[in-house]
Length: 337
Ligand code: UD1
Image (cartoon, rainbow, N blue to C red; front, side):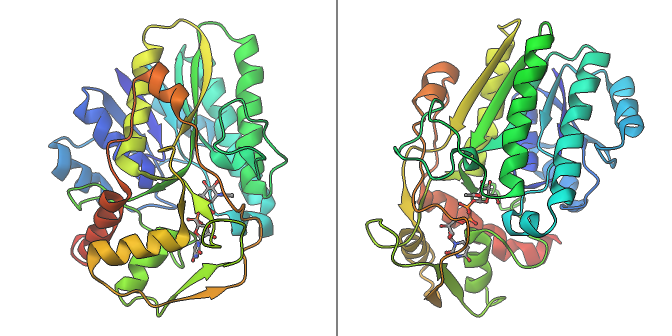
């Protein structure tokens, strides 16, 4: 099965491309490298022995994107390409709406034009906001988004539901990612934050590497077991495999739209992550407590029973594995760039 992977050189995209190749799919990467690097394609080759075909185009440019469909005649699409920095989205909302929404609309128009019936869409647990009952199931009501970024994911899901009602023979899987972390166990691909990282793990690994002086833990008086926020950290390879499982199910369907939580089902606090990292790497992290970050929810983790039973997926990697792999990648970065 030939699959277009938008954002296929990015963090989650590149790991998914590796798993697609490992599982006999032919991924076609569409990525203009605005938030990734060309050498990642080579790294994918080193891991899999196959160099995926690649188009450096902007998914918002319909004509360019259309050319890829014309040439490749794909059977499926995974749509990763999107901006995802929560803070930046608050300051530049139109940048987020323009890119994240237009690219999705183009994907759907092209699916119609070229009769492509299978889509996996990257959504986020951010749609649940500050949920009253935890763990969250797919039926947990969504809440008004805290940021334009979060809103683009909610609007994206709404667009998919409206599109599905009017289309025939389309299979759509909406995957709500919890907190993807880690890197490929080979140490050849991983997260590549450009500038100051927004997320916890690259901040930790850069601090351990001496690139940053210290880590600030945002808040220590949340109503949680140790006062720091609780999240569901999932190894990026486990997350990548969820996309393959979604396609495997779609192959036996003619028309369905399903939403799945992709998380481990386990909540871990920021302090627990830091302690686990220290134990795994034997590195003492320089950190202090700071102000709460605006928009952060105290606690969220997944009820993952739907994806486990319907897609026969389950997380294989532990938090220890993920932190070890993230650290391994950080150390390797000097050699691969
Ligand atoms: C956020 C979004 C999520 C999105 C993801 C993508 C929300 C609620 N969540 O996840 O939807 O998919 O970004 O980037 O909008 N932390 C520190 N110090 C740091 C960095 C983070 O203490 O320097 C803490 C945060 O307060 C949080 C945890 O670490 O409790 C994880 O933060 P982060 O990695 O940024 O992910 P989320 O905010 O959970």
